Image 1 (tube, rainbow, N blue to C red):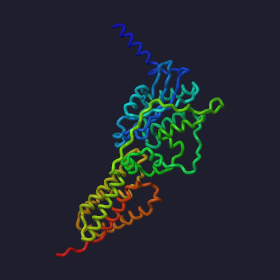
Image 2: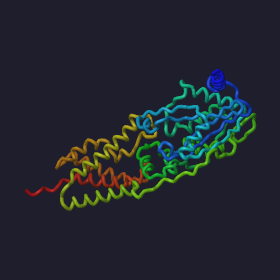
Image 3: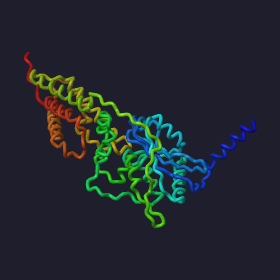
Image 4: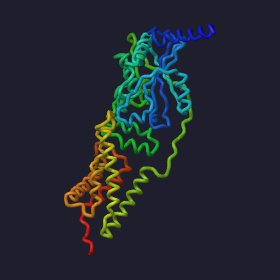
Length: 388
């Protein structure tokens, strides 16, 4: 019994230097940037970044990880808090092993003084009073936090690679290589707003973990007047063969094209018969109106800046979720007819200005915009008088 008591007491005291007291790292301590590869789940498709602190003398091997559980649920609620957690590195690797994701490590070539400052900064920010922060997809996530931590601790001695490209990629273009699933690609294009088509600077590119890793590889740190690479060469901490996503036949482009052809053929048949199927118009404009309401909600009722100012509302017009009920009437009236006539013209202008719009649309919405234009024209045109 006493042996068991002393064993637990020893373990408790051994944990105190990590959990309670601020102490000095040993000369053998290492601090690394950890980059996790993309996962299959939507929240993980862009990879992940963390910081590892390893000190064999004090038996410290932990990761400081900016993350949050139940990411998708909290994202949908509109106000997503990330937390800086302090976890065992071995458990971190086991988690990535179970998810089938590789892990890469870059040891930062820091003086002991810089390691100590960085470690204390992370320990302080992991406290309950400091660990939470408001997540932003482009500007404040797991990767940008690490970029900012390095900048704060190392100050002007840290130099990132200089801007050399005259034409920078937009945030949306940077996301493209990760959007291998056609439906995820379509959904991202629909939900992201105008900011996603802004050009990203080199520092802004670091919102993606792989770009942060590359930037750290190219960064220069000045110590005692001498310039040297910030990080040592990358090494593979965990190698897992990534599975490729299966591509089905019914992609958004295929389905939207079939929908467009089907509704276009139906509209042509209506014109031949001199009728208008009111249920079709109701369904088309009610569903696109609901989509517009979602885009509007993501703009005005959430903290996600990436979803603000979404110009997809120019075709998925929120008021149509209400106006669609008037389309169930036999004759819509002159005022509503004029409105839909103007909406038809506006949709045609969207198509004509496709390549100069400030926000890039997904190509799969093009058939839908054309159908909206044609159905709007049919609504605005008076139906021929029916024989008595």
